[in-house]
Length: 164
View 1 (cartoon, rainbow, N blue to C red):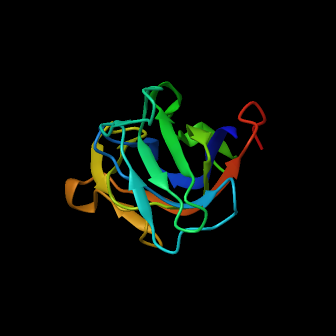
View 2 (cartoon, rainbow, N blue to C red; view 1 turned 120 degrees about the vertical axis):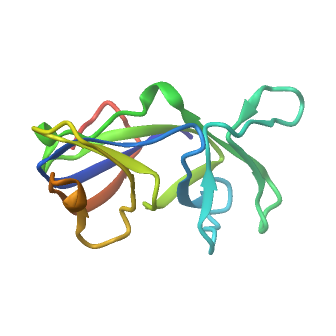
């Protein structure tokens, strides 16, 4: 199945360097079995810090899962070197923020949650634990530096070399 890139398109106001924080950051995904096409009903998360051995000693992955429909063992790995921030210069453009190595499991939907951070464009104030599920994310009003993440759109792209 290869690599699948998760791309983000956002409108940032007065903030930049929007990024997931830490190896315990949870990427909430809905997965599809590459063998039978079954799509998970529930959100599942994968983290960099998780490493599960593959059957037959063929290495490890962030998640190994047996399909409920066809019983095939599938896996997905977060490629840590591909995690990139979304910056104010990227406004209104799709940008790859992470890639996954997919071996039978394909992410078909992403649900952003808490665990993102950003910083003020001018103040350089760090805003932590940003929850991207909220419609408009007002940041830092209590700290005297206001920033907004106004709109978030996610897109999965199989050929990561093609930015939209």
